Image 1 (cartoon, rainbow, N blue to C red):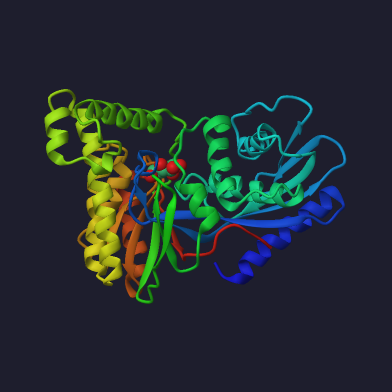
Image 2 (cartoon, protein in one colour):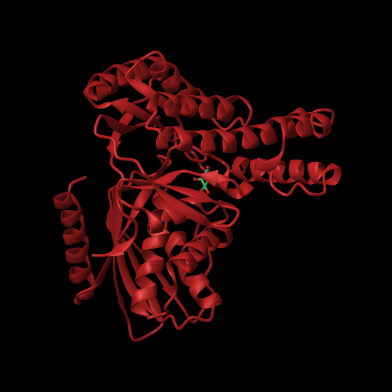
Length: 389
Ligand code: GLA
């Protein structure tokens, strides 16, 4: 997305706000995210390698003098109202991402009052690029400004994750909110989810494009499987811990330990934990390859990640697997894998620039013939995190 497009989105959200509430708002933008490698590792206190993208949610907000909250979703042309003097309850729709943040401010005893808010943008919904985190982070950032609550960026990240855990009801890790807030142009963030230390790693690729191929299969993270994976990993670690009391993180487990403790007990737990252990190792290897600018090896690790997600972790789906099979033999596609929680959404592909157009065309046609569904493609660039506009 070029600067002009972002300005257009901001201008139209601002205009809508003025039209509805007759006053000038504060404007905040917050991006969606990609993840190069390190999937389902964040809630296992492992490593992830996400980046913010140049697709953003823009929030326009202004405080009111009473306790009412009006939230307008410009793209859906829908308004939700709430009253801060009463308990906020989830409505199980988009408004939960806004009111969940408000609830966290209230729970922390922060001086939040009524406000009007309009939002919209171009982060694709349900594609696995965390449109929800983009909205949560934009709202947290806007409320922090409006009510001068002086939260640090990391505090806002944690607050947004908690809102998703407690109000939306998805037991997600911290990756999406972290990437949306801390994203840096042309950098991927090597984040250690065990201690939240991170390193922005240069990812400047003149010859490559990051292409997202969207299955158009809508995943619903809330639909149990995500939380099931999470508790399977906890159970696996608990069993390992009984035999090896010093082991507190799946990424530190060895294959011998998994073989000894988990294999005799449960193939499912063994597979889940093996995937997590291997994915963490793949990520460290990938960062090493990136450092040496060895993109072939980096891409191969992405393919390896997909294999693990599909076979051992079982969070892929036939449509995602089909998209990977299609690009695997294409030499200009250096690496590809499903991205995000899984069960739908998109694949992330590292593609030589000159091959992008033909690839989208041919894979799109094959996808349509094979599944009867329409594939969508997004070419994304790595952008900056949440900010005022
Ligand atoms: C979703 C969650 C993240 C992360 C990914 C899988 O995007 O919100 O916290 O667990 O799935 O890597």
